[in-house]
Length: 442
Image (cartoon, rainbow, N blue to C red; front, side):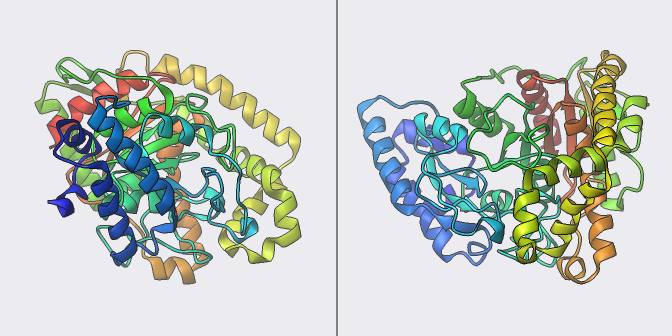
């Protein structure tokens, strides 16, 4: 029975603890054993927090036995991307630039989740400093893609995704600056929630671009995403009765449907047809604001990222993966005037987008236009790496540039996700839409 726990939703594990059918200590031991022995584990976990996990599991057992549980996820084992500070445990953000960095307290969002009873299993591998959507990291480790062992898993929350996809955690917590929760979720057939910037505290989270950085869960179900959001923020969502009938979705024609890999196109078409069969109304829509903002992606992301890491890169950049270093240094080609013009333009276009999409419950697009690229070719072909990274991030980046919340769901085709985008701070509504869509797609 214990091995089955590895493939069970976090919500069902919580219900099992509540009913007395699952012992939190045995559950933690099950996951820790898998994290020590599974072939995917060494490239998934940067380091385990075994003593902490067992102490938290024993506390969860006591609460379960005394009828004082802190919530449905009390006692459920969670993995954390290696940019969330953990007291006394290395947090290096997948980079030799931060080798030996040990914070003295937990990130606020991790502390909040711990206060609601979740069990911290350890820190997962990630793209170096979170600055790529592919998941390739020759400096530390490249986790596997669950559907293609020769391909990358998506990034930058690569290990967060594989920890769930390979049954090494019930939920993985990652970050999303340009797609880093949604891409690995899509490529590993998971649910991934990109929250609105500012909803979840970034205190104690190693930064990339704080204007765009967000925290979000990668998991097996929309219910799990909702529960994990509640654990980190206290925001609860009632998913009962979620229905697609009469819901209006706009299909983003602007850029998002260009140059799709064949399985992605098929998955998106199938998913849209399923939503319609359950009563949703779909309409293609041109979004001029999206087309206008995309050309400023380079200046907005690279300037802020390089301003964050310039001192470390100039002092010790030779220890970095060359493709990641080059992407940071691209910020040098823009001026402060370039950045401010692009930023002001983006803020105006965010308002235009909300007007353009006001009649829809959410906007739909393929999560990523491409399937997971080949790992070896990415390592040897720089042009292929750059092209693949830009394409992988193209659709998800819409949500970050426009300041939206977003959700990716498995479409029914392996590694092809369906993305839903909703206005800022509308996570509750988005999760209800996602729960209804999940029923249709399954």
